[in-house]
Length: 250
Image 1 (tube, rainbow, N blue to C red):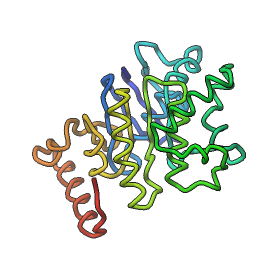
Image 2: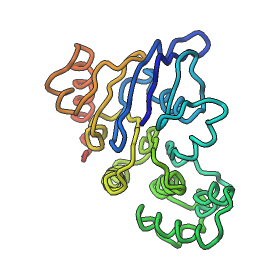
Image 3: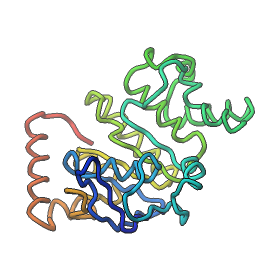
């Protein structure tokens, strides 16, 4: 579904991705995890064309990402960021329907799709006419997900979508998001710092360090068969956080 071939990326002389060859499978949930600055979010931005690789190529569904194809590829992708990334001057309804209206969907088709997505994400219909400042953090994130799904994309990219939420809201959304991913059977690529959250969502986890994949596989492999000392160190650090904060995790 998504392929990186010989991809490298630097910012102001700092190497984020030294050279990467990576294929992400279709119809699965792949979770990217690792310390800050390891290249997780850069991978998502490369896929959606927000940044361009210094070397190498990125392909989505067999189509090479370049200036001529980027617009069409973006319409096949849903992109969700922390706190929804909503336009504050637009209602929830208008945020979700923005691209559909830009593409010329008629009012009936837009309303039908809004109803489907509100039901799917358990978002109240009477909240569609509220502005982002009138919505809770969890509701804003649901609106962001609805907007990402509006055009029925084949791929959903999520960059720390639940990171800004309080633990109770986060746990509720984790349950709902996993149910949505399983129902829709789309290709999902999600960035998180939370190993428990990664294990909750993942068909496969990719643990990154300094722009390289140090281990990929199910959570059980990271816990029981660490590929190198860093993997065991990362897992221990996560367990210590869970013991200290005492928060419930899925």
